[in-house]
Amino acid sequence: MRNSSKTAEPLADLAIDYVELYVENLDSSAFQWVDRYAFGIVGSGGSAEHRSLALRHGEITLVLTQATSDRHPASAYVLSHGDGVADIALRTADVRAAFAAAVANGAGVHRQPARHTGDGPSVTAAVRGFGDVIHTLVQRVPDAGPGLPAGFVPTDGQERPDGPSAEAGLAEVGLLDIDHIAVCLGSGGLGPAVAYYQQALGFRDVFAEHIVVGAQAMHSRVVQSPSGTVTLTLIEPDDTALPGQIDEFLKSHQGSGVQHLAFSSHDAVGSVRALSDRGVTFLSTPDAYYDLLGERIGLSPRRLADLRATGVLADEDHDGQLFQIFTASTHPRHTLFYEVIERQGAQTFGSANIKALYEAVELERTGQRDFRR
Image 1 (cartoon, one colour):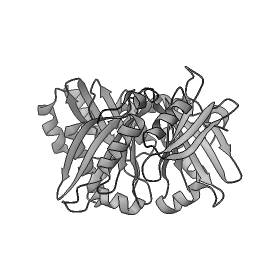
Image 2: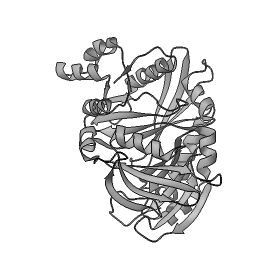
Image 3: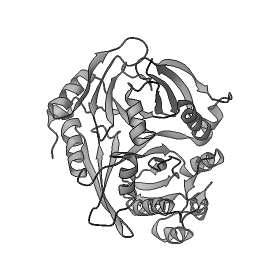
């Protein structure tokens, strides 16, 4: 499907502004992000119906929101899904034009454009995404750096729940930005979701994969914003195979939703070591994988040893190499986890690693794998 110029032009600059998670316990969730992932608290917001904190690491801004009233949407969201991603906010130079183009081409309206005063965004609006996830459209002062949602009060960015500065941990962990967001969809939902993002938001359909893990299988397609800075990996179960981890996600999450956020790093091995020291648990990889890896990809003995020691997987394409690893899920429903990914020129998504990564998740799910710390 070709994107019309009418759709693509107002939406050509879309980029991730922040990701908002609805959580059951704001203080506990914030502590985990600050203590384990070295995020700093950079802002706070709230009302009679909710409390929110904004956290940042590198260019990544996460907003955590806890409902304090049944009237706030976070209340019903957490009851249905548990903690999870509720809003992938997209920055654009002209919210009104982007909103009009998206709605004209089939986007569902969630919130009409509104102007704001203060240090936050000047205009916001919101359209539907997938499941219970929305996309807030955010307009800020041109060339401004990372900002806060409307109505937030900034802090110094170095707060920790237990007092000390997070600056040292930020440098050690070294996360950069959100590389991609993986989404689980119900059977039959993949094609319509791809068509929706193409038609309504001007995304491109850039990659497709059929992944087989034992007796189960899944279909995956990647859509990307015209700017190339917003990437969604959309996954649905293959209903001709046995039920597996995607089916389990959909059951536990009670519908479509975000399965994982992938954080980019200049040095995946270094990030994994620093995060492990802070208590983050990663999925491990059999030694046999690394016995074969050296034959498949040109790696120095030292590099191969570092990958083996940390469980980081490697792949390459025509443009370069790729290194990636999943965290073990700490979600009570095991429906949300994270990825660390390093790109040394590679533009694709680790086709040779996708199966290995999902095999690792499957072994975690079935209790057959130890975790790396």
